[in-house]
Image 1 (tube, rainbow, N blue to C red):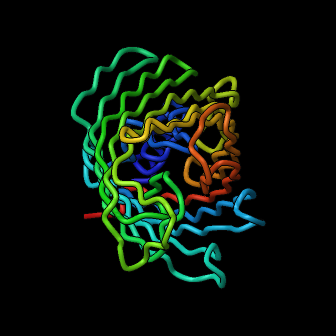
Image 2: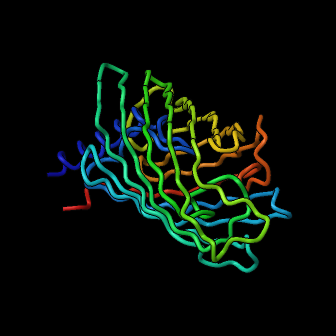
Length: 270
């Protein structure tokens, strides 16, 4: 029994090492978390262009139902409208429909969907379904792992629900938004894998963009990040995104840091 337990932990470590560089900080990969696992996250986002500094906290629970299907549930709290309060929540689901595996590489393709609610007034032309807008979103994710390098692209389309009761006169009310991203992750440490207790250190560079199809306004952000994974179970992310190009005004996430802690519990679902 002890040998089986050790082997299971080793397999978890191998999984984490093999796919660690796919655990992007600002986007989701096409790969899913392990089957019958639960993950708990706490994320803090700080924005500097609001006027003044404001922050948002996002507690999150993730469930891996099987190798192809996982779900996230999130809550959003911030002080963006004065005192710190609960803004809303979100449900996110991802289904992996394609897997091509080779030695030291694999390709994944997934479809995702999100539904969100928010009590915040609408101030900007950007649609952000993680706290700022109520709406729905769907899209596709494609991820390629090449040994220590992982590349991923996302294409999504979001529709914001109308909030006339919370609409402020003269402020824009976005309806639809096209989003796209290109993410890269590289496994720096360990150089040679020995056991699952070795810390993983990953570096990321992500390009995050959106376009309003009605007005033609768009932006492109650059988001570098670093990540540490401990004992194949605990993950710590630190990243910052800033605008490289664009003409979409009064965005919440234009200059934003992200700090996250994640804890994973493997094989806990019956």
